[in-house]
Image 1 (cartoon, rainbow, N blue to C red):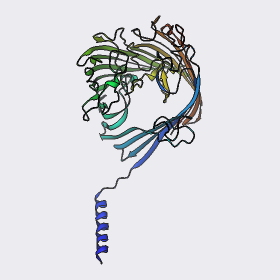
Image 2: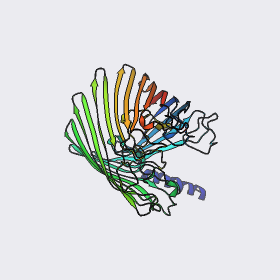
Image 3: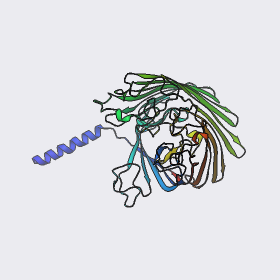
Length: 484
């Protein structure tokens, strides 16, 4: 055997030896996902996001104009979920998303690689990574999730309801459960803004992201979220829970004090025959960094409360939810009484919501894509808070379904936000309905209509015609949903 053949034989033998030393793992590959298309005609939806109430006369939408005009567009979203399952205890879970609006862009011509690519030619790099995490259960009673993941504390989404990187641990203990979660919401190595509570955590409504500086090292300026809590089933029909939350941010500490907010929450759920009642209370205390006054801060004392329920009534299900978010009539004082909400890095992108309202115009809707407008986008509502009541009825007959909703909203406090003084705190009343048909068990087509009669809060608030009332917002949508 010549030298080359000997070396080849040694290489093959070594490879086989190493391969045999590594245990074989048979993975189960699972693919799931969804596709949703929405055709929208509206004087309210503009294809983007955020609140439509603005003093900017160039902004489209009905909440700041007497003559907003109308528009029509089509947007689509696809989500792909891939799970690499080692066994019942260990999984790697990934989640990707592709968004676009028909005709928006192709070939990366606008130098934006997300939420577009629906123009002629397509060929757009627009795959977004939503989740990448390990799901591991070391015992039958303990589950952990580690990595970039979607997470909702509960409390119907008003505290945190988003994708973020961190660790979640849940354990079953007798008739109850314990939970712990830690997330790093921001580690801002750059000049981009990081926001908390009403845009920035400042006492004004102006986002101050431009004042952030380049962080010298990872972990130097961060925004962190930590929570621990538990639930206990007193009976099989009655469950109570309690949670502690710490929200800390020093990202903008070069221009304002550190934010250090503590939240204490309690919740309960009770089933009584055909009815279910649930609710919660959350109290906030601590300090909020004050913009422009380094080392200074404001004391926080705020709360939120909810009572909801549903009951089988006739052929369908009746629903009700009531929500109170505290506000502040003077957010420049030493104490903030407005409930502090969590935002993403953009001041118009909320990391929370209250989709249990089933509103389409007034609050964020569960079907929203990139076009995600709302009268009250951030529940902090420019430090004014919110009082809301929402009623609904769900009816399903064979393959047909009808969901109808009625809601009202008011600012809890009036602090003068807007281009003109308000005549009252009442925001208005919304009525909406969705009528649909199931083409397949996992595919449906539906029509959604919503109209909001604006209240006296908006009287005289139009900026295109001085002293005029804005036009009442409406939207009409056709929607196709596919889940697999």
